[in-house]
Amino acid sequence: MNINLTLIGQSIAFAVFVWFCLKYIWPPILTALEARRTRIADGLAAAERGLRAKEEAQVQIDEDLEAAKTQAREIIANAQRRADEIVEEAKSDARVEGDKLLDAAKAEIDQQIHQAREALRGEVVSLALSGAEQVLMREVDATAHDEALGKLAAQL
Amino acid sequence: MAAQTSTEYIQHHLQNLVLGFHPENGLGIAHSAAEARAMGFWAIHLDTMLWSMGLGALFLWVFRKAAIKATSGVPTPFLNFIEWVIEFIDDNVRGTFTGKNDLVAPIALTLFVWILLMNTMDLVPVDWIPHLAYLLGVPYMKIVATTDPNATFGMSLAVFALTIYYSIKVKGAKGFFGELAFQPFPKFLFPINLFLEGISLLSKPVSLSLRLFGNLYAGEMIFILIALLYSGGFWWGLMGGALQWGWAVFHLLIVTLQAFIFMILTIVYLDMAHSHH
Image: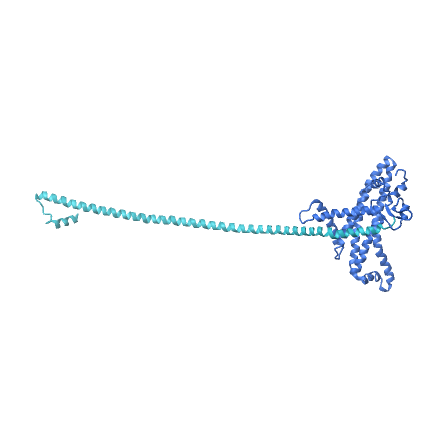
């Protein structure tokens, strides 16, 4: 248990250990710890930001969805209205067309009636003439009585 | 070792392996306590130096390995453990040391881990390594370096030198002297002040090293006394085994606590050197 040179040896060894520790052990480990702390803090901040962005996106999505729904409703309503209009239009067109066709048919019928009447008139005249010839037993001068016959035919 | 009395057994366990110049035998290893004493100051405890430097190198090697592997990514369990130790030291330094000095934390780390390792050697059964050394022809082998006052004083004197250095560097020679001479009493009583403050200054390294040495020396002594029981037959041996286990469990506390106290007090002394009154 004597005090001797070991004392100085120990002091030197201690000094060398501390120097090594100061130079090669403490700084790299503490730097790594500091870097990790920063990384974790950054990561947490990023996660926080991500979460907030997600919430904002959700709000945006809800808004967009609502807008889309409203628009869809409008489009459907417009389409409904348009369809009703088209149907109405078609109905009125059909009515007009039908009236036109009816008029045309009526006109044709009138025309045919007129033609038939003209033909009948002519035939009635010739019948009347042949009847009168037979009654009179002679030839009636058609040209001489044309005027009178015309008047007669017009009365039919 | 067979024909030993208890006293011889104990004395054998408390003798360091000394290398030095004997007045008659010249340079060599001391083969008795008397020879070791005769070598005087210019001798060296080979076992203390070997075990302390070996454990110090182990500490530096393990921590250097961690320092090389340290990244900001996910740490391995080994790295995690080392970082845990480093953060423990860092927290203590930040909590106790108020100045700014990058040297303090490495000093604290070195002291804590190194002393812890040296103290832990106390838990190795007291006869294993000395007996192995004896079989190899080495007469003495004390494996607990902190039971050698040279080791504890070596560290505490280095800390003391740093305290003085930083006191003068931070406060200036005049400021440091003023701190010693002009308080706690008025200036004209400066001899009394100087005496009181001088004692308080010198008591720091002495108490620092003697506390560690005394605790470990006493612990080692109890282990040796317990080991004596093994030569007393089966029942004494059984009791010795139980006692050794119990004392080892209790000693774990002392081993850690003394390393921690040495570290914390070193930080406190360095902090006092940096702060103005």
